Amino acid sequence: MDLGLTGRVALVTGASKGIGRAIAATLAEEGAGVAIASRSRENIDAAASEIGASGFVWDSADLDGVAKLMGDVESSLSGPVEVLVCNTGGPPAGADPLGFSTAEWEAAHTSLVLSPMALVGAVLPAMRERGWGRIVNVASSSVREPIPHLMLSNAERSAAMAAFKTLAREAAADGVTLNTVLPGRILTDRAISMAGSEQAVKDAAARDVPAKRPGTAEEFAAVAAFLCSERASYVTGASVPVDGGLLRSI
Image (tube, rainbow, N blue to C red; front, side, top):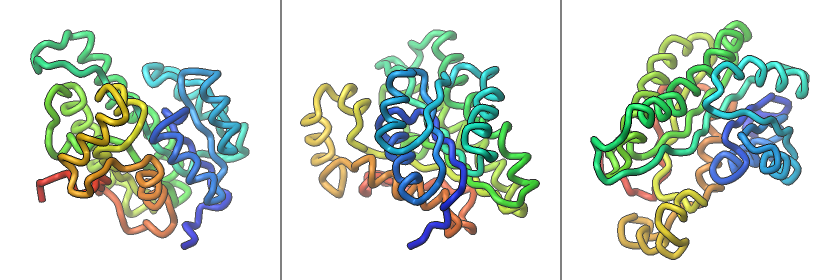
């Protein structure tokens, strides 16, 4: 299937590894000109070289740096951002839902809500004027079913999803879509770190996930790339789980 992405300019944040990198690689394979961003120059340059993208240094906490990032991407790729994928790592876990400090709440809100909104705000008006655009946010299955020990992620990712739903209705008539993708048990470095080992991730998935295994970043990226495509023009305001059947909710 031709996704109609050839020549489109795409920006994927948090893309030096894991889900973000896989999405960027898939978009590049589909013919898009891809910019990727993360806070580490070394890591983003390595990923960019491997997948055929252009690397930019940007920290999701740097809201004031969004305008410069967009300007640098537009200059480097000779065109405005037409596809935006907002991807941010999760905030810290904690056994006590009320045990997080105000500073931790503020940091999570900046990373998971204010940061994607700043990125969206930088590209959405021009997308609407041009009559085409695709925006995807990477969230978590926790927005449907809260996950124990992940209070900050449960709350803040849900807020971002509500914001995307609101904006999707505003921009739908202008040819711009905004969707959210919900990863379940995806085998990434973060999942391995939280579980303690790769085998622990696989064992938990075999126990809890109907598919009896964790998903791969590439499987997740395939869904995200479709939502970024010309073919997904009538899908907007959606939250799409990629979780091997993990969610029990309807």
